Image 1: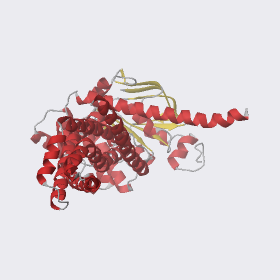
Image 2 (image 1 turned 30 degrees about the vertical axis):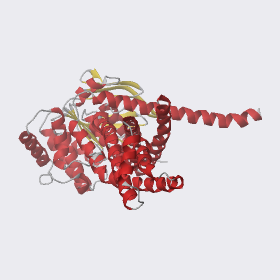
Image 3 (image 1 turned 45 degrees about the vertical axis):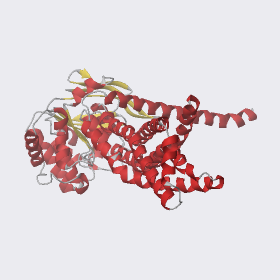
Image 4 (image 1 turned 180 degrees about the vertical axis):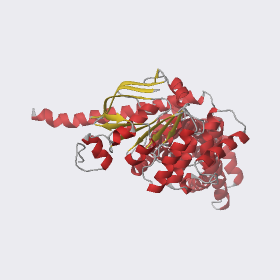
Length: 265
Length: 248
């Protein structure tokens, strides 16, 4: 009996944790479903969508360009450092282009957005929840999911691939300038490598990942904020959790999507 | 008319409302009083439809809103105005845009007409000249007044007030109560307040209901309530720490 009690308690705890996890996943999926339904029902919140597009997209461009440029430059440095050992410096352009298009562009831009936009979404919605602003919307017969959540998710999903493209472009510019001006790589060799090895599928697969990352991160961040409780501390906890969970999900989903895409090629 | 029928509400293991039933007459100013944690705000949330009771019915003009389809509930909610405890103004909108919000959502009006109504409502609550300010720039009393202007924007049939004077100094409390009376005199809507400010509500209410232990323990006109010999009512009116209401 003692043995059963010994293993029973942690087992019950584990099962409870799994149950709570599955419940939360269920609630997140319900929020996604409600957002999709309300996105397609009038009144269409075009003004709100444009406002969110500006916040998520336009106002993130500088950050994306900055981080993209430095990511491209460090990729070129590291790529050159490795390939120089094999006399393959000419492949720097192609290597950086593939890395940016397929991986670094979608993933790092998504992580930047989580930090800037995702945290803001969680904090704003959480604050609105705790000050009864969301209740005020409901009491005025305005659907809060339609007004607050759907435009944010839609704007993030649309903006992510565009920002990933900007990130990759900025990265390529940084890599090219560093490679040709500092590392002594021939400009023509750099660009011909890019043109030869970078194909449309590389870009497409990167964009597909970006769309998924935008959806996942905005959904998680909106969910955490929309249902935040516990006052200022609760909003803080929700924001931290949202950023951490979103970031981890970007990396986990990146692996599975990449594995799937590899298998299909 | 609003009818609350045998409403029960649990939160976790605690029963907050225990088979509560009462009517609210159309056109009246009805206040639900009770101690802190008595369930007053829960009750008003149920009446607005923000939460569902575990059992019972809430009937508004013949329609039970418990379990009602969302779209139908929203049609009924368009007849509501709600003043939340801290005003619940939208932080990202100015005073003007907060008051205009329900007008833009539910009516097809020209901008000039919206502006005219906004000015009219703000003047009514003494907030003219503050249209361009944001909620963070306003005091607590000012936020409540703007919240009241927003609640009245659509000329609602039923206005709910959740602790309208909590956290305000006595002078501003008097201002808010006076506004409640003056806006009610203009119209024939039903006002439902929850408050623990007994002295204020005795002056402005037609009907008072005392919530205690999840039930309506007493109800009547302000005169009947203030003249009652019931120790429970007397303890609440006088604010005595000793009596049927035990504070842990």
